[in-house]
Length: 490
Image: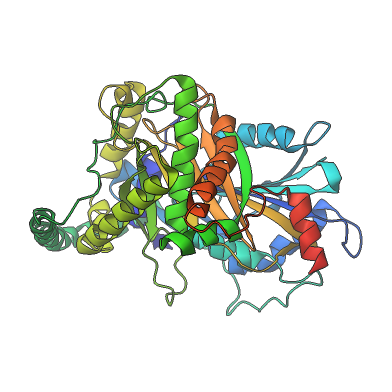
């Protein structure tokens, strides 16, 4: 039995009927070279063998009476793997369009809080004989980096399979605590909060003074402040509907731009998103009164720490410089802002957000989120930020799912009232796989934004090539089939 951290619980409190707070991952794999027959039972057996490598998959929530404190995780005594792995097929011809439409429908469905907060959909009927796996996990259980670690542990490094280490100790379900136990446990934790609150207040005051002192320096251009983002058509209250688009770009070309300009891969990703959004805004005839602002999640997870699959994440705000016409100058402006944002983030510290999240009152936080959604308050004030852009480093080596080679990995992040677009990116071998999630009732053109990523890469490559004309640029996009063929040749 373990209490959720305040940050983990916050994702529960933010969840409303219009804003389910799960993250997801769409994996496309090729089972054509499997040894033996392909079946759903084979997938279930693979999961069954590795459940001890993914602790959140057997934990479920227990709410504290009267919502006195954050909920608890318990090892679910009623865990049933068959309730979490489901089977569906796309309609013919089984192309990317049909897959995206199905995924759009599946990510709309909230997770059942009476069970462990995850589910996997095995999707057949894809062209070329491919199969897809869509896994949804509630954000209160994992963040992007933890999800990536679980993904790698649940997959194999070769078609023959990977030896699975035995669990250090046998799994044992917890007994479900009664109301008296839950209240007593909550009161014991609450008794220690005043001391923690004083420490957090003192630390926050110091941070605020340091940031104010830094931002007054003449050579410092601070990153965007909250609620400084311009209004756009997709910064409105959401409906429950979702639409998903997936695209892949060559990682090698992005790294070439990064090396030439002297920035980071994440800076280039942000510039590509900015370029795609500029194209879409121009086509819509929409001209924001200031450059768009992106919220960029930042992992603060200790790489040496083991056994914590919850959220170890903070965030930064950065300009997307969408008011800058030249793609190369736009990239440089984004890179400069990100450097300032990182310096400010280091001053704030990794623990500040987590510390204050501990003091959120569950009953009040949940009601406030529902009231904010029901009253459509997001359409009244300026946006906190315009969209979320998250870049998660993925494995640079091939993965196999139940013997099938993984072709592409498309991550999917949640969207919020007032910020109806999420672009999440994961690298896999030599590709950058983009997953875009939007609410079609506030942003109907997410596929056009996805197409614009390749155009933005082409424009940025041309701009960079002008400074080094001897460089030869590879093609901007590759299909999963081509990626597979190149892997087989090597």
